[in-house]
Image: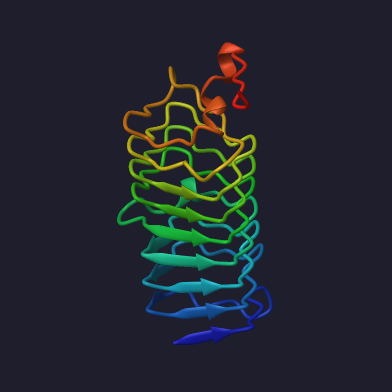
Length: 185
């Protein structure tokens, strides 16, 4: 089923299970998506800003070019939680305490996103801006941050074993020590 250019504040989506659906240019901003179930759905050019997601199920969801400001993913249902994000604005979102291994963030703005106590094992941050993102007691083992910028990760307070970082951005691991790295000579 395909849903195109629907304003869900004006026409609320019936609370149901949605499987193998495509949502294109839909506006979910400020909508209450609590207890909805989205499985194998794709969302393209949608706005989810400030949507409520208590016990919402996201299973194999794909988000492309979506505006997702201030979302509280920590309230989502844990079982089977899996999604990927491409060219999305996720600033001010919270993934606090979520187990989202293997999640892919590609070309995303992740400004001030809270990843506290998150399991991001083998997650990929491909060309993302992580300015002021919070990593506190976060598992980043085998995660790939080589093509991302502006992250600050305390190696003493996060698990980063076998994680991948680029030389030009590795200073984000040394900030707490006040170390200055000169990459020019």
